[in-house]
Amino acid sequence: MEVAGRGFARVSAVCLHHGPYTATITPAGGGYLDLATVYRNMVKELAALAEADVLQVMVKGTDWMPGSLLVDGALQAVGLTRGRLPARLYCPMIVAETGAKLSKSLIRSGEAALPAGAEPWMLDTRKWPGTVGEFADRLLNLAGLLLSHPRHFFRSYSAAELSRLMSLPAGSPAT
Image (tube, rainbow, N blue to C red; front, side):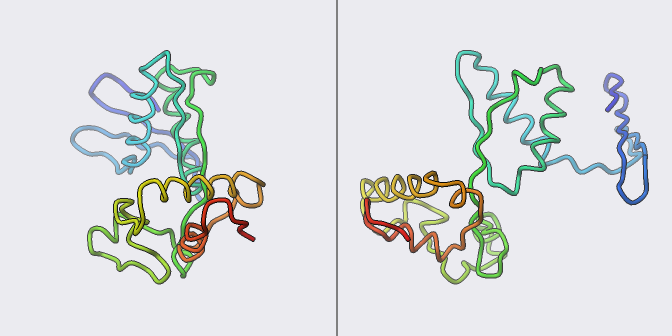
């Protein structure tokens, strides 16, 4: 990406189907470039890195792995070296019974219903039916299970399976 003051930005890329192309974006128009999510994540990560004495770890769903490459490129474009890029932890995705990502924003906005197997506490932890201590114990138990073997961590979980795993008392085996 080439930026010339506030006048324009020129973005060059390669489409796998159509080959190389360049789009020039100006305040008056010139092209459409949807960078909302990439830009938002770049700004969040750059702001987090402002605290030099703090190890920042970005926690993201596995669906964001490809997008992180774009964020890394943007962070390098503003002057960060690879050694200064934030550490990232990619967590398993929670999906509805259809396999679609459990979308908190769509459900909260009323554009989608809570899918079968999903519980209200999955969108708002204050709705956990037990105590805060019990929730913390169950969450730590779940984290221990997920981190016990890569086969548990590098996959997606249905909302119903997450609910089942969280219903197990702390310390119980979760086969």
